Image (cartoon, rainbow, N blue to C red; front, top):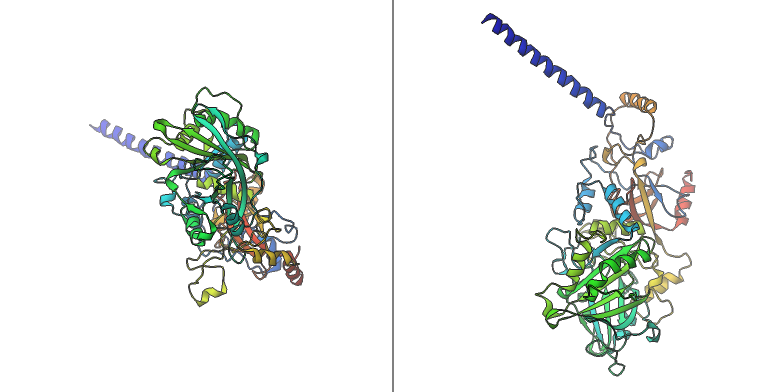
Length: 581
């Protein structure tokens, strides 16, 4: 018994020693993985000129992709009052902005990884695809019938009548193209189930307020005289047109706003049938790759012919093809194809399909559904990658394209919350920022025909064109690099990623001697003011209007759009304050 007792004591001592050794090893490992302690810093006063260089890491530091970048550096708006947080505790503002939009990727994946995957797909001949009629990746599947304003959906308003062209010219800023002889042949049977019925015009125009401020950027499909079946018939003089809104302007908003403007003398009728319409886009970095992907993934489904091998006639830029596809049980689906991606050519090229299902086909699988399923089928190794609203909005900001509800807001709200809100005339009852911009400020001059006659908003545009000083604001792209910013105390903007161990150890010594300060820096958001760095927030440059997902471009940066004031007054104020340019 005595020897057994001694043996038990030895086992207990060995176990305790093993526990202590394990604890020491884990502690050393933890220290080695977190040997750079988190640092909290407070944004210094910008009035202290000698601390100008230090303040660049405590407030936003953005590079403006304009000719103003050599004249001033922008900083954030009013500082955020919360304490420093870790990277996993992302700013609530960014969480709200990104969590509202759907994504086709797992939200736990790093945004930079997703951004690189999207751009890699764009550069391939597979490409990417969007469904702008139903948010396939939203919880519950957002559609025009239950549109909540967060999904980047479009809506389509159909117009028919002898007064279609005059109505388009009177209500919108761009002139309707003339002539149909140069559009090419029509009435061509492409397959036993598909026919090229007619060709029409495809162009963009601006929907303006009476003051000339842009409400939305519309994509218009306009067809010449046709009969009730959509076939060319010069005797009827019945013209068709379809107004497709910008992504984000889903639902019945456009239809509700245009309906009161239609009078009997206009000789047009409007219709809005969201349950029967779909808009699907296929895009690649080059138009040739987009055509290759279309031939592989869409053409046979569109023609309803698995053996279809004829060379396909793609619509040219500025034109639209109308196809009639016969389905099961005698149903007919109208498909309109145009060269458009709802993005800019700097980002991608491709084609969009506007599919108009027949009412009798509601119970059967729709043609649009079959096209989308084939595009995104997991067994389709050559198919494009489906994208959600978050991926589209990041590409839009990267392209510098104005967005509905961000840069295009019309006149904004008619009423403000209280007298105190009058100081900020662009703020609404809900606290949102409304840009109230015109097309010229957003670089959308091509949407306006300055030679045409009277149209809604013409006086506001004319006044802007006559202004010798030019537009009071211009849209710019602002880039916030992670290497120059310490957002929410994540340590990402301290510039320590690529330096050697010696410099890192020297920096650690300095941090141990410094007092811990709070960090008032946060991620930028729409509506924030931009100031000249070093001006103590006395020289206002403009406002941020859109912010993409941080690192969503695939690089360690956050891309934003901003409306900046004229450079003259800014440069004058910089000179008066004797700030370095």
